[in-house]
Image (cartoon, rainbow, N blue to C red; front, side):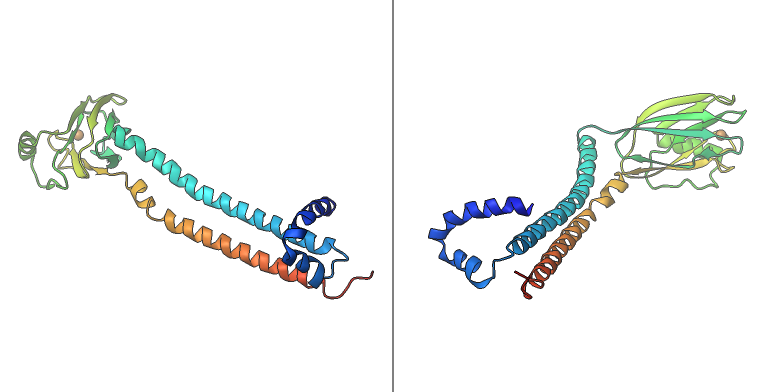
Length: 247
Ligand SMILES: [Cu+2]
C-alpha cells in the first residue's frame, strides 16, 4: 500500500509546488521526511479506519431506515385498500368461544370461520355497539330484543357436529371493542361470549415514534467513535515520530 502511495504523492507534488508554497513548507520544512512511509501510512490507515467505522455506522443506520421502510411499505397498501384478515374461532362443549378475544384492523375485510367442536349447535353473533358489554344477567328474550334493536354485524350458526364450519366475510367496524355471543338460550348466560377488538393496527402505530430516537442515537454514537478513532490514530502516528529512527 505504502509503495503505491509514493508515486501518487510524487505526482501531486509537482502540481502543488508552484501554486502552494504553504503545503510545500509543511511537508518539507517542519517535519523530518526521511522515513516518509510512516506519516503517509498512518494517515492512510486513519482514513481507512474512519471509512470502515463510517461504513459500519451507515450499515446500522440503513438497518434502522430499513425497518422504517418496511413499515411504510406495510402502511401504504392499508391506506389504498382495506387489509384482508383471517380469523378462526371455535365453539366448544364448555359453552365457550376459543379464542374469546380476537383483534382485527378497523375497516379490514375479515374472513371469519367458526368451527364446531361441540356435539350441539352454537351461534356466533357480533354486536354492532362499540364498547358495550351486555350484562351477563340478560335473559334470552332480552338478548334477542337487543339484537333486534341492534342488527348484528355477524350472525353465524354452526350445526351440532364436531368439525362443522361456517364462514363469512364482513367489514371490521370502527375502532372499539365489540361483544360476540351465542344466542342459543342458556349459552350466553353460561358464559358463552367474547370480544372483538377493532384497532388501527396499534403495533404499527406505536412503533413509528421510537425509530427517530434510535436513528439519531446511532448517528451520534458513530460520530463519537469516528472522532475518537481519528484522535487516537493521530496521537499514535505523532508519537513514534519524535524519536528519530536510525538512518
Ligand atoms: Cu352456544
